[in-house]
Length: 246
Ligand code: F6R
Image 1 (cartoon, rainbow, N blue to C red):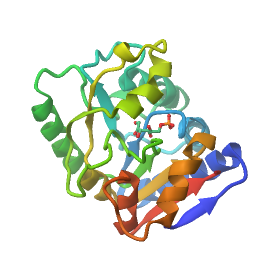
Image 2: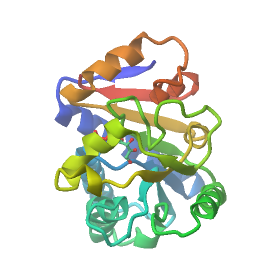
Image 3: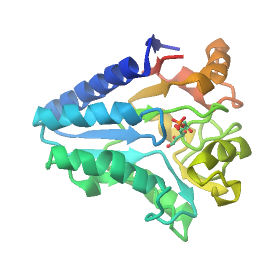
Image 4: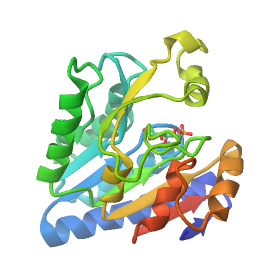
């Protein structure tokens, strides 16, 4: 897989942010709009901070920039401090709007973890992505079990946005955000499917930190996708790149 290697997280984040910025600038310059797919979590946090600074000083017109997040817990109240909605509001939509008023916060989209009809919610989300013109660039992190979004091992190549059971190891790894109490970590999530993610015109996956070493070693050995490591589906994408510091 096409991999760019960096010697530090900072260097990785700087380079990823500059690349995403250039793609947004080009998209807006050429077609007047850009659709950015976002992940939550620790991996892209610094990239987002740098990207927001770049978009702030750029004076680019961002009124046609839309963002779509990969996933959300379910059931999850949007006002809950651990909802992905809150995370994105605090670390992306609001700070971006503060430095560049042309970005409108309602153009940041995320699956509604409160929806009483999750299947309908997922279908509507797919339609919204389609109507926005499809995702130009999707940012991904990787789980210690190889998941992307909440697509846990055994997710299929053609899977679409849907409700899933969150794997125990993912809940274990996320309990740090829920007062270390596994019972507080939701058992389900809504996530873009592998098929949905693969439709993005470009994919940039960030692999960072010691705890991702083992899964990255396994991923690197694969020559073709294997359902036990969902991130391996990137192997069949024409324009996917991994930014790694491990
Ligand atoms: C979250 C998401 C997840 C994370 C993954 C890694 O929206 O898509 O797949 O990217 O769990 O999380 P971090 O970056 O916190 O290690």
